[in-house]
Length: 230
Image 1 (tube, rainbow, N blue to C red):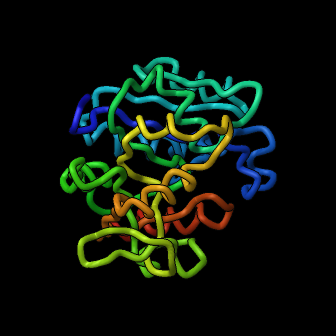
Image 2 (image 1 turned 90 degrees about the vertical axis):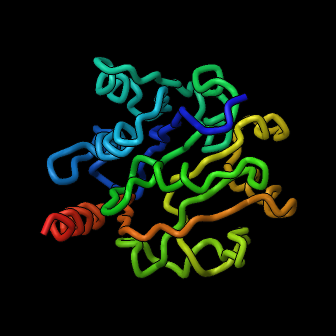
C-alpha cells in the first residue's frame, strides 16, 4: 500500500442546486470563473502537484463531464442510476483509484495561495492519521457563511465545532470505506469514526479559498484571483 498519495479523486457528480438556473443545462463543474471551468481550476492545482492518477466522478449531466475530459488522461467514475454522496461515490471509484491513501478535492472552489495538495502532502503522517483535512480560517474563506466546521488541538487533531472551514481538500485512507455498510453515505460518517479514534487531523491553509457553490461566489472568486495577481 502506498504511503505518499499519488492519486486524486475530484468530486463532480452533484446536482449544483444552489447554483439555480446556471445548472439547468450545465453541470456545476463546467461553470466558468475567470474564463475557465471550475473543474479546470481544480485540475490546475492537481497538475501542479504532479500526481500520477486523476479520477473524477460524474452523475448529473455526466456526458458533459466525460466530454470535457475526454482528451486527457483523466478516468471517469460514472455514478448511475443513483447519486452516491461523497463516501459512496469515492468507494464506487476505488477500482479506478486503486488502494491506499489518496487525495480528494471538491470542484466548486477556487484557490489563491500555496498549492493545497502539496501543502497536505508535506504534513501527511499515516502512522498518526487516517485523514488530514485542509481547513481555512473563516476570514480567508471567501463566499462562505458560518462559524466553521472543525476545531484543532495543539497536535492538529480535529473535532467538530466552530473554528476552521473545511475546504474540500484532504488526504484519506480509502481502505476504511469498507467498514461502512451503506451504499449511499457522506464522508462525514467516516470522519466521525476517525474523531472517536483520535485519528482525524486538520491542517490550516494560509492562502485564500473561495466557495463557488452559489452564484455570488463567481464574482467573489474572480475578485480574489484579480487581487492575487496584483
